Image (cartoon, rainbow, N blue to C red; front, side, top):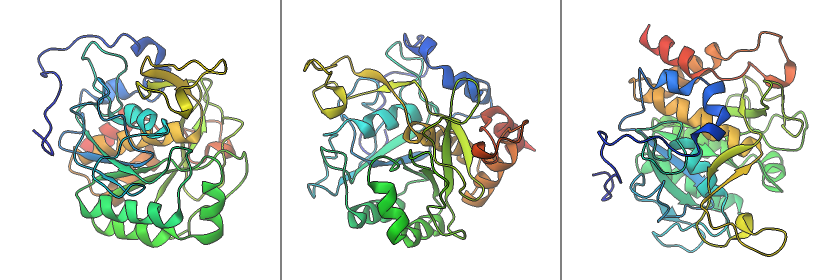
Length: 312
């Protein structure tokens, strides 16, 4: 039992996830190969976002206690859909015969709601969310805040730098989406200990929407990413014809989808006993960019190479 919640299926009851074949990113990142060495046991990934569908069958039981800074309570239910998608990428149940596989099969998710039903959020709530997650035991903190006006707010104010430093000092790795404006940016102060992630496509090239240029940034798949969605109607599950996708799953694009894959790799390395600085160094050192494509930063993350390096 973790955070008062138990897992939904036993480790000895492995069944193939039916949507696994649509998760091309797992293979690109060589995550299944890395799982042979580490699955991120006893690691908590805080998803500082729009909350999580707390009863989703592929997430229920993966959760530890979180907080809702929008409503000011301890029920961070997702009213937008974004956080549920991010959480599934990072650590949905794997091999449970339901839906998708998560990037870190043995990690847990700490839902911290800082974005409202329209996907917007205040700098103050985001900052408080990061600090709260760090103070309540998060080992990895995922910030998929690159959509809409959020990134421009961060660029203008830089308010999150101190919160990220606080999280690092508490022992958490902070992973942040680069943003989706297709622009060269340095969203955080150079000395801020944060791992910025851009998006790549199926061909290993930079996604056309992905921001680039942050110091020591890496890339991960962010196009056509299949993951969990709320099983009820929210903005991201409403179709153009007014119907609602209540299947609990769907594909999204964005650096917001790339970041939680890297957060999952960070969780795997934390499970190997590595500290935040070691985790960031290993992920950066093992990223692959054979053609030296500038917009990929240091390159596309390689989970297997990172796990192997952790064993050296």
